[in-house]
Each structure stands twice: as C-alpha cells, then as structure tokens.
Image (cartoon, rainbow, N blue to C red; front, side):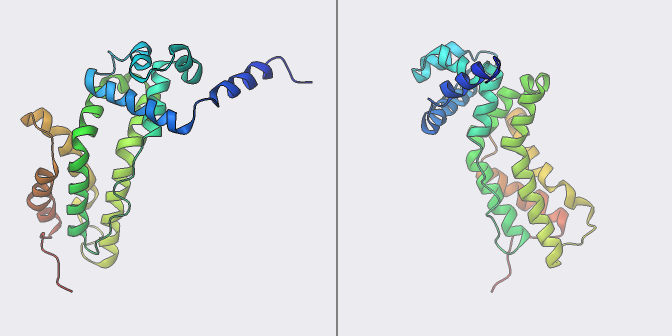
Length: 209
C-alpha cells in the first residue's frame, strides 16, 4: 500500500506531465525574453503567465517559484555553439569562436547582466547561469588550446594559454560597460587578432594547404 506521502508526489508528477516539451520551450523562451527586457527583479509569475497565456497556477504547480522557473529556463534553452569548431589551427578556431560568440552577444550579454546580481545571492541561479552560458564555452575554448598544444602550435607551458577563455569571454561582458556597445562578431574578431593571438605567438593567417 502506498504511503500517504507518495500520493501527492505521484499526483504532482502527473500534473507536470501535462506540459509538453514544445510548450515548455515556449515558456522558457518567454521567461528569458522578459528577463532581458525588464531584469530579473521585475520578472513575476503573473507577467510570465500573461506573456505565455498560461495559467499562473500552472506555472507554480510546475516550477514552484520564480527562481526555479528561471533556472529551468536556463537549463532548458542551453545551446552548444563552440564544441564543433575545429579548423585545424588555434588561430582559426579562436576566430570562429569569436564570430559565434559575437553573433549571440546581443542576446547573451543582456541576459547575463540582468541575472548577475540575483545570481550572486542565489546559488542555484548562479550555478544554472554558469552551466548554461559560461562553462560550456570555457570548456570549448580550453579544448581548442589543448589541441594546439598537442599539435605543437604553442608550447605546453605557455603562460598565457590558460587565460584565453577568460580574455575572450571577459571582453564580451566588459565592452557594454566600458563603451556602451555589445561585443559583436567584428569586435571580437579584432580582439582575437590584436590581443589574444600575439600573446600566444600566433597570427591570424593560416597556413596554406
């Protein structure tokens, strides 16, 4: 015979199953759009319900609270832009990474800015933000650097190698604060060419096959 505690848990699981994966994606997209538009502090379950034409009670039943909904949205919309990049040279990889990151900066940068303050006060939100937007790109860039070391393009003990990801992702975050403009693909490409590659002893030119 099931315990009394197992009944509400089973019922909750049944209710949650009513939201399809496609509908969940619509909700996640709307949640993050609202965060970009007005900030995390201004986000409300009522606002999400109105934007998505979803009952507020359904949102609470499914996710429980605003932080849980935003965490789910970050995980549910996570994109992997960089792992497939492998041009055969570190310079080529970093330039492709710069273009990919720059093309998304208009959406990713305002989202990170909007969530930063709240994330520092909410460990689960900070973890989700890092896992969705930051750690995958750090891992991909670090992998590019390791491949270059294995190929002998750069020395295995080159001091600046460990800071490549921090440079590229850091300037994407910093440019809006310093210059009032997003770090778009053109800017990040120039940054790689003029600031990162020289520090690695490389140039933007790639060897001819």
